[in-house]
Length: 60
Image (cartoon, rainbow, N blue to C red; front, top):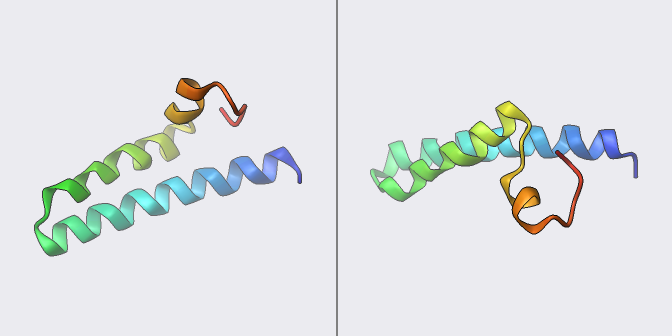
């Protein structure tokens, strides 16, 4: 699989996941869903904190 396709998919996936989690938090009032801001920022900045911590992938 092409690494550029993986990077694009991961970025879009992080942004969508962040938006969905924040929307669920706004709808339900459960504040834990506002942690969706983490994958949202990671997707916008194209930075993967999990990859940095585990050092097992090179998607950054």
